Amino acid sequence: MGKTLDEVKQEVWAHLKETQCVYLATAEGLQPRVRPVTLLDIDEKFWIATGTGSSKAKQMQSNPNVEFCLPLPADNGVGYIRVAGEADAVVDPETKATIGGQIPFLNDFWTGVDDPNFCLLRITRVEIEYMRPGEFEPHTFLV
Image (cartoon, rainbow, N blue to C red; front, side, top):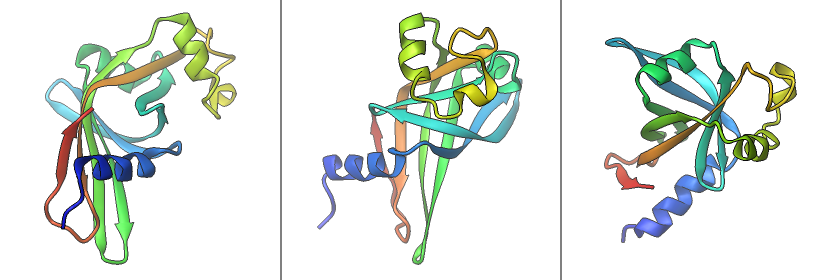
């Protein structure tokens, strides 16, 4: 018997619960651009920290549609979690302080959440596709 949607969602959040590297796709004109980034899953919401002048920040400002993928290697094959959504720059100082305070590498790149070069992005309007390793039918749901 297959898993319920709630059980599938619990599996997905278990994979994403730790800060980790994912492959983020943005668009520069008609050209997709993919690069590794550190994803922050805080309270089942997705966040990315970057520099305000970075290529990805500029690309998301022009076109907020993004996707990221987390490969899930296992002995019986490779699965993945693919997330599509819209990236929005966070301007609210309280949110930046709350989320920024949970970014382990913040002070490695910025002087703090008030640093003008610090850009916090939240991915919203999220659709998740989850393929378990060794399976061939993905589970898709909205968050």
